[in-house]
Length: 252
Image (cartoon, rainbow, N blue to C red; front, side):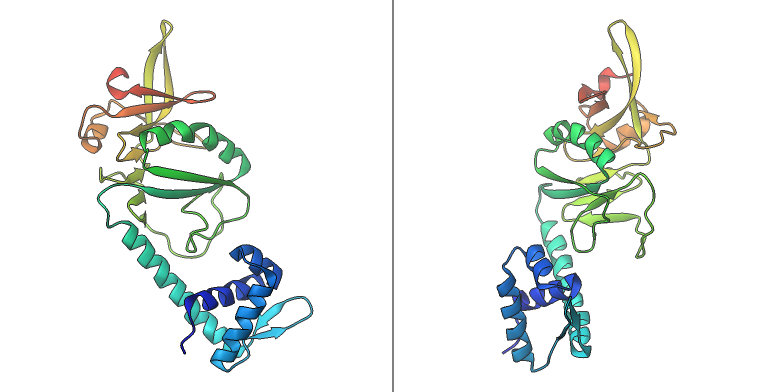
């Protein structure tokens, strides 16, 4: 009998977490379930996979070999999941955001109104100073005030199902981009005001600059007309406590 993925997933969690308690918590199962499934896997494979130390479980040489293969399986499974999620015709799904407490508070104020324009997208926001593991989908987008010291691959774009994060916008459906960093000038109460804004038409979005503000491009610039091919796109202007949805055609 070949090992099934559920047993291998429990083995993988125990190898990463080091204890039955933390592995069980990460998986949402009971402590005895983790112990029982690992013992069953060892019996099925015919090798001891962990050294049981007083304070933690440490993979044996056989466990290290299985760990490498299981991580490769996990990576392939995640890749299949991302690709299959992008086969539909509509832009929908869950986007998991991880940010520090201050940035998370800022995002929390503005996400509800942004979601009103992307009504098929669910946003999950986590406030944590711990760096989420992007490859394991602990988060889809990691937002930090400073560049974290991360290893891995630098990519010009990241596709998560039907959603693509990239620096320079192309106008593709499902795109969330930056680079242009839109700003809008609007008239209110007899005076004009210029603020950063999201540009969005319900199928694609361009984000404003966060953190140190070094400038921005007017939402009436012809560059946005090339991205949003219909005139009815919106400027979601950043206010003090909320976003203000204003037709881009009303800005100047």
